[in-house]
Image (cartoon, rainbow, N blue to C red; front, side):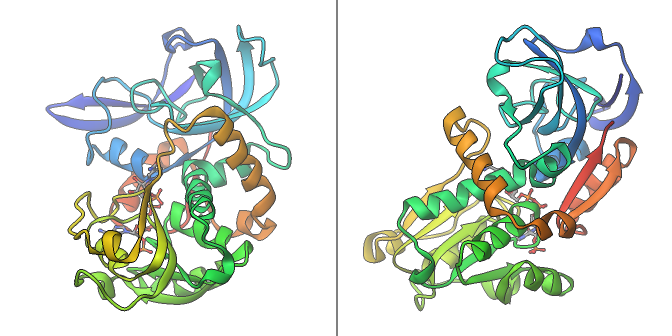
Amino acid sequence: MQALILEQQEGKTVASVQTIDPDRLPEGEVTVDIDWSSLNYKDALAITGKGKIIRNFPMVPGIDFAGHVHASEDPRFHPGQQVLLTGWGVGENHWGGLASQARVKGDWLVPMPEGLESRKAMIIGTAGFTAMLCVMALEEAGIRPDAGEVVVTGASGGVGSTAVTLLHQLGYQVVAVSGRESTHDYLRSLGASRILGRDEFAESRPLEKQLWAGAIDTVGDKVLAKVLAQMNYGGCVAACGLAGGFALPTTVMPFILRNVRLQGVDSVMTPAARRAEAWRRLANDLPESFFTHSATEIGLSEAPAYADKIINNQFQGRALVKIA
Ligand code: NDP
């Protein structure tokens, strides 16, 4: 089997495509023949070594994949069945999806939802799944489409672009925040009604003019601080990312004077029932046009170059990795 292998050489992470014996796959009840994987921000951090994602080398990266069951000791899965996986530490501390096969726990797999197949599932990937969890968090906080504008930061990225699409599709007025002029046409085509520059979010006071009913933040740091200061009374921010940094230079003012809710969103350990619900929603709520808009297909050997592009903010949408 073929795999992208990450190794450490003189303290640096080195990535190469290698042919390896499937017997080297880690333990697990289900072996999957992978059709498609994708590159997420976390994969880019792992492959470039820019983030301390991986502690044990050699490692096969790839935090998500879709394919069909090759062999299973878990009665819930049978050979040939289409499945997908995101999270659970796969591609971080258990060999992941940037390979022709993976062996994983049955508990980690999601049967392919009706209306999706491997390629579409990986256009969505961890990024799209996380966007859906963020939208669900806003819904659960009572933010309805008529409540006012919803702002999405890091809008041209994988999470951001899917969040813009989903919110627009569900009838919300979506305002996109992007650091790049070149993404504006793309964001409008996904459904953003207005686009603001990231530089407008550089500095903030503890409280500012109330602008947003809801927010999905993939950036963190000063951008998230500004968004919090601009939330409407009773608004909710679903925060899932740190593309701009992990700091949060804010005050308690939005929380204690405007009843603002800051809802964290994690996709890695999401329980199975919520996972299934999010995937069902994704299959239903994403328009067909989403799948033609946002995917760039690459091969396994191109993954390191695209990881660099992601880290250097030179890529938009989703990088889809063709395995089979
Ligand atoms: P992408 O790289 O696809 O997108 C990130 C976007 O953030 C970029 O497209 C860019 O958007 C913006 N951005 C990039 N660099 C900076 C910067 N220095 N300052 C401010 N904005 C920046 O990543 P994903 O969409 O896959 O992931 C987004 C974030 O969400 C990441 O931090 C990732 O780790 C996190 N994440 C968290 C998950 C969870 O479970 N909590 C799951 C998945 C992702 P633009 O050019 O439009 O400004």
